[in-house]
Length: 217
Image (cartoon, rainbow, N blue to C red):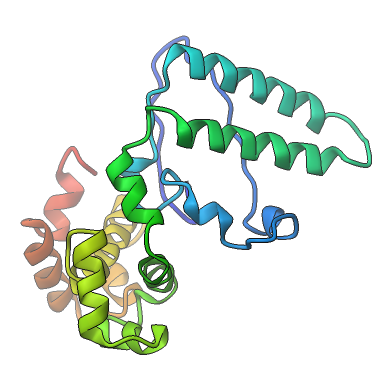
């Protein structure tokens, strides 16, 4: 999961596994390509990419690497952090190369640098910038060219990419029952609650209140 992604787990009995938390900067000081992690298809804002079913062979190898990671992390050695980085990258690469990854989504994410940068900019500015032209200017391309690239590599127009990111954040915030719909509208920089409700209903087919009551929430 990417930083700041709201999530929940509901495990059945007898569940076993590993949880690793690390910061973006943990790898940036180690890799020549600072945005290298963005190339992995399962590390993005789309939660449908975040859960993968691994084959028995891959799962055994991944579990072995996690055990080695735990062992390395427990050591107070000079190269401990680098060993942890190497093992984590090996885990990511094994998963990315496995049959568990949706190749179409993976190709769409890694194929075009402008589209990747567009998505990255949306993640940072979705609550302030809502027009494709604003992002096109930041990317030094025309709005028409940006739209064409999104259609080619993502299958949707640039405006829909932006709206989808806003809806995703709205859903994450709606799951948090401590926030009112009005507070969420303000947090997402909508002028008023009614405009936010209208936008959310148009994009999802339900009101924010209905979403909170639905099983999806």
